[in-house]
Length: 182
Image (tube, rainbow, N blue to C red; front, side, top):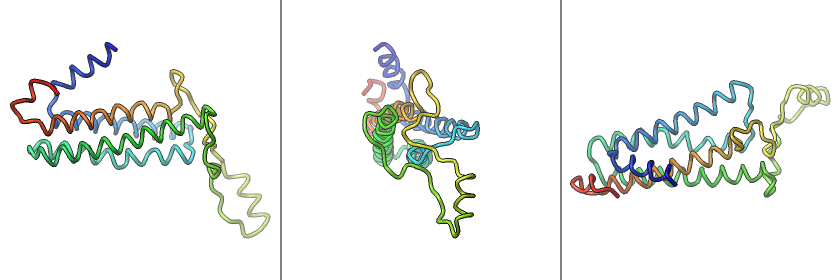
């Protein structure tokens, strides 16, 4: 609870541009971390790859939001923050779904078994079996502090969604009211 209070108190002092830059930095660090894990040998499954879509949209959206907020276009900044919140709300739900698949709470998609090209011959098919590495969506590659990367995506996405909500509220406040909080 103290962490939430500290986070809220710090957020109250930020301008809309600073909130957008914070969202940009957090989203960029998260997707860069996913790429780093992949480069280190932790291959993503199909659901992991789909979870990245929110970051591919959210990183540039946060950058544009920061630019719009910098120029004082409060209404547009508020709308962009709201869109950012929606993108990461969806990402949080998708991350929670994938984490639930990994924990065995529910069944994952049946096609989450990798992709094979249609083989022209039996020897081509056997060659594909030797070279294709199937990454299952229900198998956790790594857990950090008890959470898989899908679980951490859900947590980070909730924070990014909150930044979008706070940013929208802050952007739509009259400038004189900004020091008084949300």
